[in-house]
Structures are given as structure tokens and as C-alpha cells.
Image (cartoon, rainbow, N blue to C red; front, side):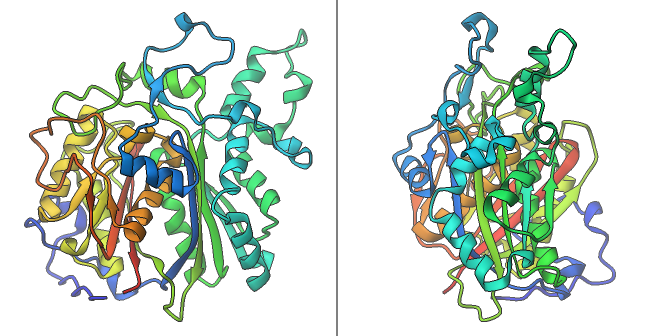
Length: 433
């Protein structure tokens, strides 16, 4: 793995260098302290495309999307629903939690339980627990709304005494930590349990948080991931911002007019890999906060570029070594234009970049883990997805942004996840030679 040269003392800070010479890696001052190599021991994702990574890979390969006209809201009439398309996970209404987990019963935790059961993840967790001890494995999960859908329902069903109904009078499901608390109990892990809630970058930033815990010696491994489910607050909240399209979303398309919302859950297991034998690895991460606006990205992509640079520098990887870049690509006018310009400034045209939200919808706090799974699929299978629904790239797009799928072996893949308030995170994954 190539190493980056150290940033010269005369160079200006990251935030004053929004657009470097195209294709040139600008290293970080932190690159002299590389994090430990972290193995990705297992990973999984459940989305509108299906359950588990095989279902995700098949849908990507067949260019078969999971979006459908909005049918969310039990008992809601068509007139009460937004005119939009959603990425809904089938079976959640009937996927009740086992009796021993009834305390955490809600849509979000049902999806978490469904995702945990895919791809041998629970067995892999058990192996880590046996190897290191339950107290030495952290749980670090991202979510933007947790189980707020249960809270919405509780308020619509207030009793005559203006109290929550008995079946929803469970405080744990009305907190942001509902997901983490449930997963820790469901897996039997007893290490630090952390909830990351930084909007749409949440379940990308969990990788960085876990890496820091492992590097500091607090734990030896971590279960990371994220889950977010559809609810009224999400659908009507994003619509109130004028961000929801009435059509299936079209990332980076010249005529894009907004996003499609989705729900998803996914997990990955990270472990220190001092022997270097792991097939899949977390090589680097970069985080930034441009704090430009509550919901709009910095127009010059300052935070976006800083996060990407940091991830490359920590990984010791040059920009032209990235084989696949999964873009945040929400299909909103502002986000896509800023991200496209930043990518074109930093990466050569040989990099295959795309947004997969045309397949799944924007899964919010789960986007980071789901799209990291897509990056890992690209590394394992050589499947580089293009984009669904998009037909004519925006003028801001460089040669990196691809509409069609490609198939080829790659050594490194990158994932971008950007959230409201300028919470940005980029991850670099690699595979053994």
C-alpha cells in the first residue's frame, strides 16, 4: 500500500484549499499516524431490494430498482399520502420481534432484527464474542430518527388522560438510543454502546468511531451499522423542505428535482487485523463539518473535499487508485452539483463513480452502511453499479460520474455520506492482493 508524502508546513489548511489540481491527492497532517488495519469480518444490508447482500448484488447487476409509488401508512387513504416514490422493505408489518425482545418492539427495531439475521452475521458476532469477550466488542450504530415512528403512533393514540397507550408506554422506544440498546441486548455484546446521529452521515461515521475505539485499545472489535425506517416525520418533513420528487429519483441527472426516501438496515463487523490476512479492510476514513447551512451543502464543497482528502490520506491511497466511488448523490439539485464538482476536482476520469439511491431511495441514517456494503460488493465481485433513472448527466458532472454498470476487478472502493448541517464522512475500503 503506497504511503502519502507529508503535507508541507507551508501548505494552507485543508479548509482554505477547496479545489486542488485535478487528480492530485493532498495529504493530511494526520497521515503520519496511520490507524490500525481493520478487517471487515462480515457485512450485510437489507433494503427495498431484498434481504442480505446477495439480494443487493443481484438487483444491482440486473439494474432492477426497489422504488415504488408511496404506499406507506397503515390505514391512510391515498389522499393522505404524499405523491412520491419510496424504497420500502417488504415484510416489516408482520416481522414481530421475538417475545424476549418485546420491550423494544417497533418498526425500526424489527428492521434491525431482520438485518441481523442475514449473511451469517449473528454467528460471526458470536465468534467475535467468544474470541475477545463480550465486554471487548463495541456496538456503534447510526440512525437519524431511531424509533420516532412509534412515538408518532403513541401521540395519535393518546388516552383520555393524555397518556401513551399501554402497548406504547415503553420509554426505551421513545429515545434516540432505542436501536443501540436493542442490538446490544439482541447480540449479547457488553462493550461500549454508542449511537451516532449526524443525519445522513450517521452510519458512515460509525466506522470512524469504531476505528478510534479500537486504536485506543478500549475494545478489540466492533459491530457497526445503522437502521432507519419510514415514518411520517421523514416523509412530510423532507417534503416541507421541497426536497421530495414526485418521480423516482434521478441522481446527477440534468432534470433531477428531488429525492426518493427509503428505509434500510445493515451491519458490519470490524476487528484489528495485525496479521494482515483479512480479505476486506477498512483502510481509511475522513470526517468534516462545514457548518454552512442547516440543510444545504457548502456551495464550494469545502467540507466534502476535506472529508475525501482525509479518507485518502489515512488510507495512504492516491485518488487514481480508487476503482469505485459510491457518491452521496441524493438527486437534489444542490447536493449533486456540489458533490460532482468536488469529485471532478479531486479524482481523474478513470474513477467509476455513481449514486445507488435510484435503486434503494435515500435511506437517511442507514445510507452510510448500505452504500458501504455496495462498495464492499464492488471489491468482492467487481460489480461497479451505474445509476438508475438518470439519462442525461448534469453539466457539473465530470467523466467520473457513470450511468451504466461496469465489471472489473478493483483494489479500493470509497463511499461518501453527507448529512444536514455539513456532517460529512468518506470511507476507503480495500481488499487483499
